[in-house]
Image (cartoon, rainbow, N blue to C red; front, side, top):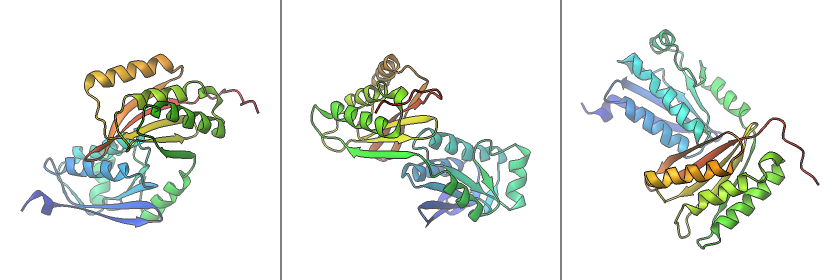
Length: 247
């Protein structure tokens, strides 16, 4: 019996939320498949991902941490909420014994998890294609400035547009790049969907350039969203005491 037969991962959609059912054997030969597929699903940016695990055959309980790893990666980008559904004692008991999941919210029914995703549907988002010419960084800067003004993010009005322009300047797409901006309660995310894959030296250069601009706490990374596409992202913390924007 092959690995494909030992583990089954199926999906269905519920009101914009992807419900993933993981069934079969969880061991050293299958856990990476679980982790990678959850990240792939989150990378498609549904409203949320609800993971049902009652039919899981846990052969190696320590590998249940794979669900927390997927949650942590998705939380950085694209910010897709992941929820676990478990009511089967055979799965719940090893989770409880190890204090897992440490981060991923856990529910007893799918409906409860879907309701929790609905509560998290807040914030604002802007997605815009970028031109394939040398003006691309300037366009990204203008889009980001307008979004900051529209969302009232005054404390990042000088910083975020420069960060967006710097990130876009490190891509070399002809026509396929796009800018994704997201505002949540305490942070602003800037993402560039691109086919450009930065080498280690380029990645370090970009981090240095962003650090020279940012005057707030920030996080950066790169997330694969398909076989030939990645998102370069930066998350900027929004200060709690930011001043009001002038009219």
